[in-house]
Length: 94
Image (cartoon, rainbow, N blue to C red; front, side, top):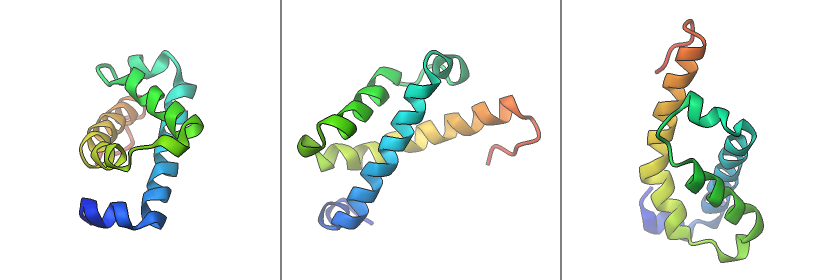
């Protein structure tokens, strides 16, 4: 799906916003452990996005959501897989 399709498909974009909200909530719940488990991530930005998604949902830039999902989320996913593998060596990281 390209950006225009994402912006025009409200079912998809709303669902993605909700999933991002859950990711941000999980980061919030991790608290300072997030930096220990996955150093170097933009934790302040991630928590800030969660606050916007929860509390300023009427002022969300769908373009920012697209950019986040397209370019930032894959990096966070990779780091999370590595962190999980380090916690549980029996878990494959791919």
